[in-house]
Structures are given as C-alpha cells and as structure tokens.
Amino acid sequence: MIRSCRERGLRTVAVHSEIDADALHTRLADEAICIGPADPTRSYLHIPAIIAAAEITGADAVHPGYGFLSENPEFAETCAQCGLEFIGPLPEQMRQWGDKVSARALARSLGLPTIEGTELVEDIEDAIKKAEALGFPVLLKASGGGGGRGMHILQSKEELRAIFQTARAESRVAFGSDALYFEKYIDRPRHIEFQILGDKHGNVHVLGERECSIQRRHQKILEEAPSVALSDELRRDMSATIRRAMGEAGYLSAGTLEFLLDDRGELTFLEMNPRIQVEHPVTELVMGIDLVGEQIRIADGQRLELPEHLSPRGHAIECRINAEDPVTFVPSPGTITELHMAGGAGVRVDSGVYGGGRVPPHYDPLIAKLIVHAPTRAQAIAKMRRALSETLIEGILTNIPLHQRILEHPAFEEGRFSTRFLDDLQAERLLTAPVRH
Amino acid sequence: MKLDFEQLRELIRLLDESNLTEIEVERGNDRIRVRRDPAPVVSAVALPSVEASGTTQSGGTPAVEDDSNYVTSPFVGTFYRASSPESEAFVQEGDSIAPGQVLCIVEAMKLMNEIESEVSGTIVEILVESGKPVEYGDRLFRIETN
Image (cartoon, rainbow over the protein chains, first blue to last red):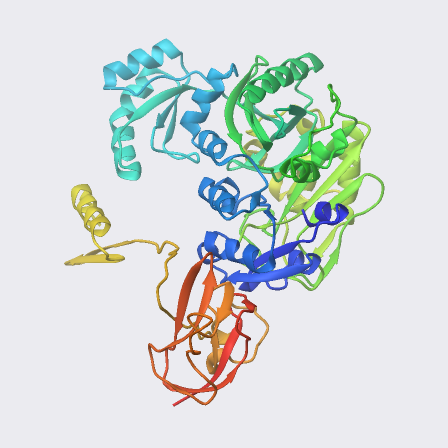
C-alpha cells in the first residue's frame, strides 16, 4: 500500500500499536502514529483511535488492508461521516456480503450458481425428508454457527438419526439456538476464487481466478494463478457471469468471490470477501496489474482502464511464510537474527520483517509472502523451490520446510489435489520425512 | 464438573442485564466463572491518565526510561491545556495535583476527553504545547509524586 501510494506521489501515515513501534510499515511510511497498546481491541480494532490518527495527520483516505477493520461496515461508515475516503466497497455492500446467509441469497438472485441447501428443519422426520430430497452426503449446519463450527458431515439417514438430537443440543449450548439446516456436501472440493474490481462509474472487471486449495484448518497457505482445474471455456463463462452479476450489484473497489469446484467441474458460490486479499499478488503478476494501485484510482473517482478480455500470462505461485513450527504449527515469535530474502528474475517478496526486527506474539503469524512468476506452472514450481532454498530467516521458526514438502509432492506437481491435500499429506506422515535440497 | 445448562444460561442472562463484567459461582468443589470481554468505549468521560512503566509492557520491548514520573496520553488526538481558548489552563508548572484532578484535554473526533491525575504530586514540566497532536503513550507532563 505504501509503495503504491509513493509511486503516485501520495504521502502515507502508518498506524501502529505500541509493540509494533519498530514494525516495517512504520519505517516506510512518511509518518507513523501510535494508536494504542498491543491488544488489538484497543489499537488496531479501536475505530476512534484510527480516525483520530487520520485527523491529526490530515489524512484524506484510509486503506484498511485485510483482517482487523477491513470488513467492518461501521468503520467504513465512520470514515465517511468524518470526511475520510474509505478505500474499499460501500458499507452496505460490506454488510450484504459479510453475512454468509444473505450473501448466498444475494448471489443466487444475481444468477450465480450457489450451493444447494434447505430451510430450517423442524424435527427428525422433517430432517430426514429434507436430507433425502437434497441427496446424501449432506452437511448438517447450525444456523448460528460459523468458521467451520457446528457442522456435521452425514452420509446416510441412519447417521442422521443417530446424531440429530445431539447436534441440536450442541447448537443450543454453543450458539444459543437449535436452528439447523442442510447443505449439499462436496467431498474433496477445490477452492477457486475470482478477483473483481469495480469503479464509481459502474464498470466491473473480472481479473481471473486463483486456486487456493492448499489449506490447513481453512487457512490458505499456498495459492496460485491460474488454476489448472479450469478450462479456458469455464474461466471465460464464469468471468462473464460474475461480471454481469457484480455489475448489476454495483460493486465498488476490490473483492473476491470464492467458489467450490466439485469433481464434475461445477463451480458453486461459497462466499464473497469485500476487500483486498492476502493472495492478491499472484493475480497482479499474471494479469500485469497493481490491484492496490487500482483501488486508489477507484477511490479517487477515476475510471478503470482495463482491456475487455484479460487473459492470464504465465503462472504465479505464492507461499505464505508464517512464524511457526513447520510440523507442529506452534507459533514462533521472537527476534529475527539473520534475514536474506530470495531474489532474481520472476521473484517477488512482500514482507513485513527485516533483519534484527521482532515478530511479536500478539498477532497473526504471517510475516512474509514469497511469490514467483514464470511462463509455465512447472517452471514456477522450480523457481519457487529455488527461491525457498535461498531464503534465510533465523532466530525464529518458519513454515518454509512445509512449503518445500508441498512443492515436491507428485500430486501437487501434477495439479491433482483438493482442499484435503494437507490432511492427506499429514496422513502420509511426509511431514517428518527429511527434505531433499 | 457437571454443567447445568439452564444455570449457565441464567448466569449469562444475569451478566447481560447488569453492569457486571464477571460473575463467579462456587458450589462445593465446582466453580464456574462467566466473564464479559471489555468492549472499546467512545465517550466524553474523565479518564485516569495512563502512567505506564516501561517494564510492564509486553516482553521483548527494549528498555525505555521509566514512565512512572510522567503523565502519558491514553488517546490519539489533539492536546489542549484548557477547556476552551478563553479559559485558564487546567494546571501550570509548579502546581500541586491531587487524584482525580483534571490536567488537560485530548480531543479526538470532536470528543473532549478530560485526562485526570491518578496521583498526588507536583507538575514539574509541561511537555506538549496546547493545540499539538499527540499519539497514544506520548508524555504530556513530567511530575513528582508525593
């Protein structure tokens, strides 16, 4: 963000908590303002502190990044009320897409293929009727749940009978309501997401897809663009469908529509993230676009000036470098004693750390993104292997060895994987095998 | 421990309906505590000044001069020595101060937050000019406690 601003001659202010006083962004920005203690609820999530920082520095606009307040409609509204341009969608759009249930309904009404589901179930007999109509396997979900909680995968009505009352009780205790419903369960899906940009003049562009199936506990760790699972035709058709739908919705700024791809090659809408995402660099590289730069232009009222049909050029892969044990995933905060990031042709590093810098324990373990771009997927994999082996981060543990194992796995090389890939890897006990260099 | 769901619901309801932040119930060997996480508050209230000592910050912070002889800002905003341009300053150098006494205002988002002293003492030095912006943690006054 700071880089895109500087290239446009815009001055920047970095807000930080006390523990982040030496963080990289505070050193790159023109000004830095301490907004509170390490506890995010009193700093990064504290709306008045952020607004006050904008006031005293005379800032005109705010970019919320990802995480923290980036999907908080109240924050976007407060910015607007205080005369600050919020670089992102409209508060109403954040609300609509932020609520999963209303998002699915909205997506369906806009003509996007959505996952089949039922209404709330009344009792066990009603549940069996609904589940059979939908077709097993089904996912029994708590209406009040979220984030992967309160879900049961059921293969048959016998399993449903056995678990129904327990599921109801669990839901009541955990979420305060026993409202349950069913969704079609897709076993071993691929996670495919499409990047969009919308300007203030009603133009919406779709900038291709990303494959984000390599996940651990619903957290992405490796992403690529384009996806080998999509034919040119499917990409073109889906892009056109999304463009029409989001144009109708009048969507503003950057956003990502997430889909599941099943083994029949059908895409179904999962959710929409009304913000820029961590993995945006792979799209930037294959599309030759600065997405954050475009967000700034859009906020400034300028028109998107993109070609009618955008095709990806080459292949990009991103590895999220986390400060954690590569086997146990236990966080590894501390001081970075040695740092050498990879370089060379087709290598990009978006990092939040520097040699001698500290990784505090209070926040997300993501410390850097290593991204490569090459003419083919095979070359991108080779380049990423090379870049990972060149990367030196000492003083803390990182998940680089995990990335190396992923990139060596035949299933990954061949593009044969689903969101279960890392679970399967764990099962194969490859995580404890030595890595070839 | 046996969890009686109805009793738990009752505790949660009690917490919700009151101003309490925490309720703890003990019966025999069983104990349950229900706590509300503090939510961020925006209001024009008088707050005690933050007198953070460098050593109580999260581990790993490089050693800084002890903050206990300073009044530091608990807000980001604009520092004012008086409640209005025409009013007298709340305190001058050399003044004695008592707990609860208003020392200054830090204004943010049109809200005037009065900063109160937590201690008895004397104002030794005023470190910020009226009308200047301050960050969270900035030193406003050097004080001597009694």
